[in-house]
Length: 339
Image 1 (cartoon, rainbow, N blue to C red):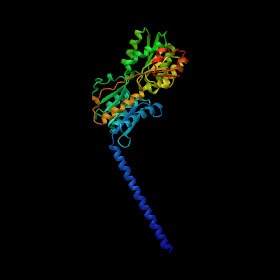
Image 2: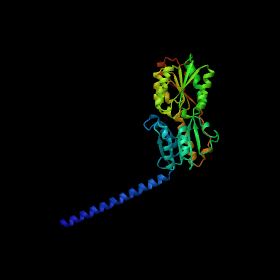
Image 3: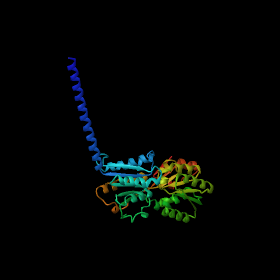
Image 4: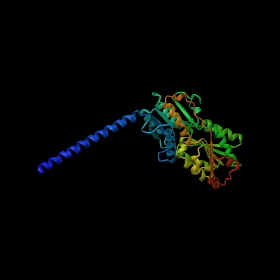
């Protein structure tokens, strides 16, 4: 009887093992099928400079993906994303762009001029459509109406607002005589810098320029500013400056320097004032272009999307620390005042 009982146990164990093997096989087949299906889904490659640990990375990418979902795309069901971050080091853009091209993405969404150049180089032999988030697309594409090639753009058009920022600083500091501009010369800011220069001349302001190509050079530029004592500062935005907004805001405050930027995120972290299109809004505006391209549109034939409104945001806490009385004209015009 004991022998018979042992035989039953062995047969039962064998049956359980067989069922387990069958279930495991089915599971592996399902995973393989899912992976094969995922490979066939439209793939959106994203190239950004914001570190994944940044709150702005989460906000911007979350907004972009939500906007894509609102257009009917569900990740894993009818779309996939492949996101690469240079994590503040723009020298990584070419390698990351090549990785996205090698992953056979259907469209690339890239942030900044340096990222666009890298994406164009990576897609030279296989023209993958590109949607770029830019502030000066007119310098990099054939025209606003027909960008040409394999790329279109969502623009913040900050070059058109550069003079306005200088005028706002003059309103904030009525006795303004000396003004500084900080910019990254690798970021194609010639047009914007020229507008700042022309605005300074029209207001009889003496302008001094400071360059920064890296976080270290930002610190060095402010060390020079501390020696030269300008009365106000215009910061021209690009992917380098966007990543180091907190550093810029802190250094401006430490040097008791009224500074203006184009994105509100600068004010959120303690900067004095910003005027320009919404950075988060640019990611939202990129989603419909991704939709159109996935449905067959030619990126080079899609007109560059331009902002319809600009945000004026003022930080009264910072103004108080700097001893600035913000005029009523700016307070009334502001979209938001942080108190």
